[in-house]
Image (cartoon, rainbow, N blue to C red; front, side, top):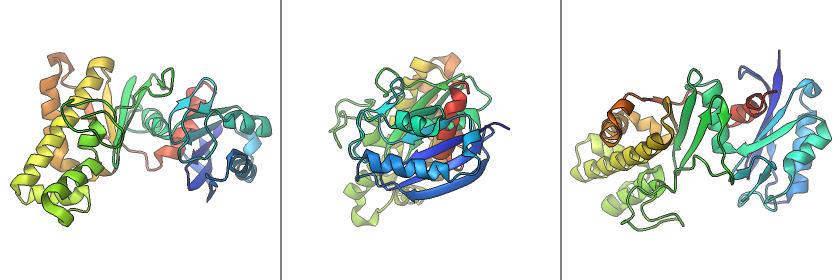
Length: 299
């Protein structure tokens, strides 16, 4: 049985797991990541965790998921706001040198998408587009089991895709960026502007919608339009077989998703209207996806 090591590295915690190629977690260890204490401390801690895994030397590869864009050719992070000093630091090379195991690096949202494409909801489809709709909006394009990361590691990132250029910018994104208009955080911002402190989560807006509140109906209607525009742009460029959607906003999918899909159909060519939209399946997509990086790269 082929086994791999998946590493989910965040600014606060790191998880290291031994995983089968089918996605079964055999052993998992968790530790503080020491993300702000510099790369040498972080990498030394990761190597120590790897060495505590039973039979780690038998694993065919190591995959690491990290926050932020990644140069997947040179295996370095291009931006490391939550991990001090990691921009262009050769983390994968350091771990590979210490363990003797081929090591791969990619963005954590990309890893989640890869998990869904190989062992999750998209495993039967050649072209999978994964989107997480939560505090923000992120995306990943997977073709024939391989991530398309792009020259600078930004491929698939639709959070900054413009759905309406005439709206105000937020959070250093483009005016009318999808993340600023249709994410969970955006719905909270818009809901508080109308309802005040009555809204503390996106769910509060969805609950008001279901109660028939006219202002909430307007907010959710705009959100579904904005998401439909975003997905139509993705579809017109990539023509995927399936969209796999994850993230906290999916907890209220029954409220908004059918409406969004119907609007999406009006924005694409007739032959594209039957593309599948479905919910993500993997319970631990970050670490499973990181573990799938070596598999995706042919190991």
